[in-house]
Picture (cartoon, one colour):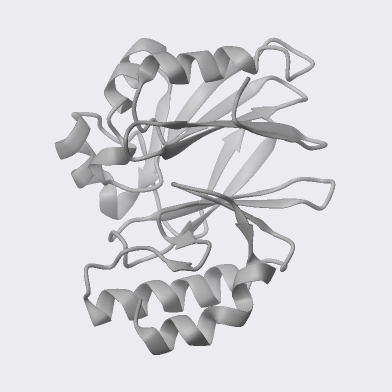
Length: 220
């Protein structure tokens, strides 16, 4: 059984944690047509293949992987990308400004480079792409709006419970990331939105919103 499971009206979301870095790998399955999107092929292709198999009966039609989306270029999020991209032949998606880093780190070219405001289709379901600059130049959060009203934000390493991601003690990068997170996530999506980060436990925008000023003051 997957460690993470959300059964919504339009989709299921399953997830597992892999590697010594405890990376979260997520699988979105569109219930209407069985289309699936894997988010962050971080490590352990065998475990990820098992994750995909666990969702075989999550849709009305046979499930089929249609894409692999990467949140950002860091090595711990792409270690299984080549093996899975080669074995499945599906399209790869990632932020345009991280595509070169992903190619260098995994030998996988990004088929669909993404910018802020783009969408990724998973069958009849669309995920919104939110460019969050700072942790890496091309970090992308993928946002799913289920017709039930639930909003899921796959934030990569840009937003966690308790703060934004690592910006290398660079004040400019920190300000850029916090500004983007504040405007493009907290300023755009409801407090009930569930944040599913690249490591660790989930949170909500509402739980984190009161601390935005504190994060800015402390500088990390």
